[in-house]
Every structure is written in structure tokens, then in C-alpha cells.
Image (cartoon, rainbow, N blue to C red; front, side, top):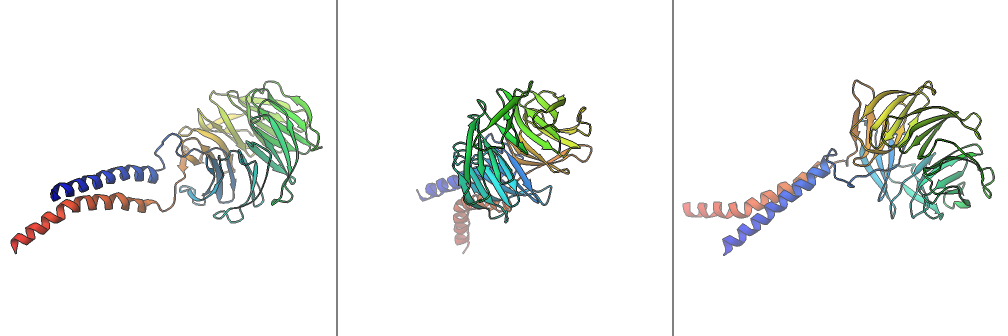
Amino acid sequence: MASRKKLLISVVLILAGIISTIFVSIETNSEVIIQGRLVGYNIEVAGDFAYVSNNDGVVVIDKSVYNTPLRIANIPLSNGAFGMDIDDDLLYIAGTSNGLVIVDISVPASPVILGNATIGVAYNVFVTDNRAYTVNTYGELGIVDVSNASNPSVLGIFTVASRGIDVAVVGDIGYFAAPDSGLVVVNVSDPSSLDVIQTLPNTNGAWDICVHEEILYLGRHGGGLNIYNISSPEDPTWLSSFNDGGEVYGVSGDGEYLVLADLQEGAELLDVTDPEDPILLAKYMDAAPHSVYYDGVYAYLGDQDKEFILIDFDGDEPMGYPSRSPNVDWLWAIPIMLFALGISVVVLPVIAAKMKKTQ
């Protein structure tokens, strides 16, 4: 009876070792993909650190060693987050049900929530001149005074369209990405009264906006890329388009190069030196990005399957480096210990019995 009990204990320990091996393999291998495990949405970058929103809030990633990006901190938010923006040492988060959340990131490894503005559901945010502009999937544009980060105050909330995904503001002019109707141009000079100027034609699917100097890049879900001259901010002039299929969820560039985050095509690097003639230079296909940030050297993705990917386009083939947790190799001690215990429960008594017989 005792030997059967020991055998049962041994089997249980070895099975536990096998199960733990599977979990440790997943945790220590950033290339393993499990749907929904490491989803990343929006991404912002400041210095050596990247911030990726997810279903639990925001994860902070140290990218100082470009080929080994490491998770170093989390900013937990109930119901997660999507859009973000950074201004100086402050991270502004569209905190879904938490409204606008303002976080001190002067010490990235120890972010501190300073305050929040109650504006209902928030999907994305753009910050300039002590004002935060928020959008949500109900088509509302919120304007918030953030001069006091600990006590932001709502100046106005306006319905612009049936849905809103992104917003950018240049001076007194705002650009509101409404996927159902297109890119809406609004005057935001008076935060108590919004003036809708026009909706640009052929911009349905408007999803993500990147502005560099007098050029506006519009990523369109299902419609590729539109490029506009906004030297006359109220009346953008169409310059060109680029579309090779897929779903453009994010655009980011520096006026010379532009990177598209395409959920179907991966990350695409374009030469936009001549904005009237964008040229595809390279693709990184092993990604399903929701967003992109380009700093002129590397591209950073908020990825549907891998959370975060740093992409180096310099070379014959683009290389991608997903994030991982630091110092997780010690987890292998768990299955090793379980296997050792499982075997020892049976083997040690046998060895002890043989030694006893030889005495």
C-alpha cells in the first residue's frame, strides 16, 4: 500500500513538472504566440523607454538595449487603456472607463498616477499647449485643461461624428479621425463651442493621424494612406495616396521616412521625401500591429500577438525584437525541482533498501 501511495505521489509530481514546463516555456520564449496573451494596443516612446497600452493598463519597456527590450513596470488601470500621449515627463492615458489619466514618468520604472479627468469613455488623446484633446468611440471630442496635472479640468465635450478613433491639433485647428465619415476638420479655439469646418472627401476609414511640420499623414482602415499639405490648416490639400491592401491602424514618421502599422501586412517602411510620391522600401511581415512609433532609427509596434516589437529596418532584411520579462530563466527551477522530487519519491526508497541489504 505504501509503495502504491509513493508511486501515485511520484506520478502527480512528474505530471506537475510537465505542465509547469509548458507554462515556463511560454513565459521565457517571447516568440510563442497565444491569442490574447500579450496584446498591445497603442505605443508611445520617450528616451530609452516605450509605453504600451493593453487590457490591464500600460506596460513600461526598457529598450536601451535594442535587441533585448525588457518589461520593467506596469501602470494598472481597470478595464485597460488604449490611446496615449507624452508631454515632458507626463504620460497621458485614455483610460477607457477611467477617463483621462495623467502619470508622472520621470522615473519610468516607478510611474506615479497624479490625477484624472472624468470625461466618460476615452479612446485616444493628444496633448498640446496645456490642453488634452480626447476622443471616444461615441464620436465625442473632449477638451481638458491639464495645466495642473493633479487636478485637470474639463472645458468641453462635443459630439463630432458617430465614432472617433484619433485626434491631432495644430494651432486652433483639430483633425478628428472618424472612420464612418472621414477626417473632420474642426476649430478648437473656443473650448466652450466647437466649430466643424469640413469633412475631407475620400477619407472614410480614417483611423490614425501623424503630423510632421506642414504634412499630415492619415492612416485609413481598409483605405491605406492619404498624405495632405496643411500649410492652410483649415483646408488640407491632398498630395498622394498609398495602398497595397491590408488594414492601416497606425502611421508614424519624420518627414523623410514613414512607417505604417498594417494589421494584415505587418510594418511597412516608406520613403516620403517627396510626399507626392511615397515609395515602399521594406516590409516586416512577422507582426500584427495596432500602432507604430518611429524615432528615425527604429520602429516600435504595439502588437496584437507580441505586445511590443522593436524593428530595425537597417540591413538586407528587417529584424524584429519582441519584449520579454527580465530575469525569468530562474523559472526553469520549478519544473526541474518537481521532476527531481517525483523521481526521488520512488528511487530514494529503493536505493535505501538496497543499501540496507548490503549491510
